[in-house]
Length: 242
Image 1 (tube, rainbow, N blue to C red):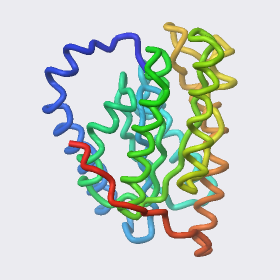
Image 2 (image 1 turned 120 degrees about the vertical axis):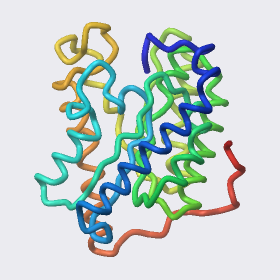
Image 3 (image 1 turned 30 degrees about the horizontal axis):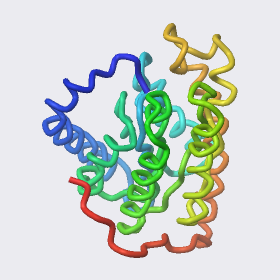
Image 4 (image 1 turned 45 degrees about the vertical axis):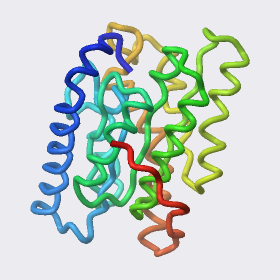
């Protein structure tokens, strides 16, 4: 989510950006393999937009970094990879998904997308279809999926809000994915938790987000450690997204 996104520029440079993004994720994953016991360390990918990328704040203050710090402090051996791209809609996330899946081993994917679809008034049916394909693609690779809830503002009317807000619980139920509650609920209502644009969280706001995200992640990690996690739904082979 970002007010600085320029659609025409993104379309022009998207192929190069996708390859650069894939290289970055691959580097992060390979770096984890050489600096920690890769087989024991759970690789968690946060696949999202600027709410994950850390728009307007430092990389070590962004959601993935703060989440990893929390998980390690609580005794979990986990590496959290920042795969957030500011400005991405669900369609843009889907367009770079294959590159991400080819980059390296992922155990858990936290999908955090949809805010930009909502802000632009994109048809909720499109956002639903894109997220549906993303979840299926991750699960087809044996990745456990967690889906973050996004809620629509009232700007587009109640019918839009109801259709958009239903996407997340319904897709989580369909794919048996863990649904993470709306992590921005307490942030957007408090200007002290936002940077100057009034939309994106500052480090304190991200800390509030981690308070929402960490408990379900830790519950899943505990279940994985105990061997009490069902295999991801695979279903039919998802269509290619390139």
